[in-house]
Length: 146
Image 1 (cartoon, helix red, strand yellow):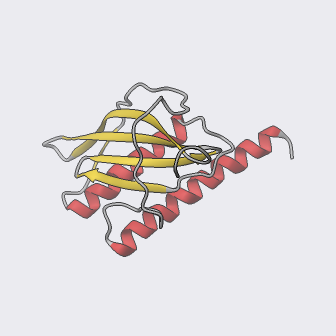
Image 2: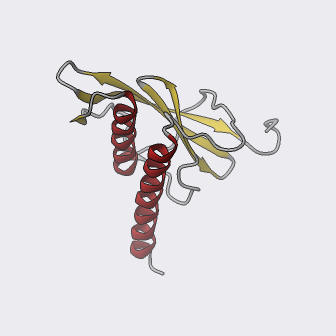
């Protein structure tokens, strides 16, 4: 398989993960999905990224809390697809709500987990916008106690 085919397959895999996560949220009525291990990411050096600037992406969202959470997760999944450069990793392993307007996305790589923390703004007109994206890395494997 040539590199272009591999990149296309990685992109398709990310979108498949996004659809599966969105479906799981809808089915379970959850505000977040957490892996079975339930591990918590701790801030450390910056995660692998294409662009660490906050996106100005916004979209109108329904008023209900579940629908608004789904809307924020869709925005962050779109942003991850556009900006995250961790090709060759394990995809998305968890999306976790830290509070009503902040979500953390875990992206396992060899020997570490890249964590992107998204903070959202809720506008009076119903729009939701990405306010900030903060990358961090959780080291895993031998010598890290994990």
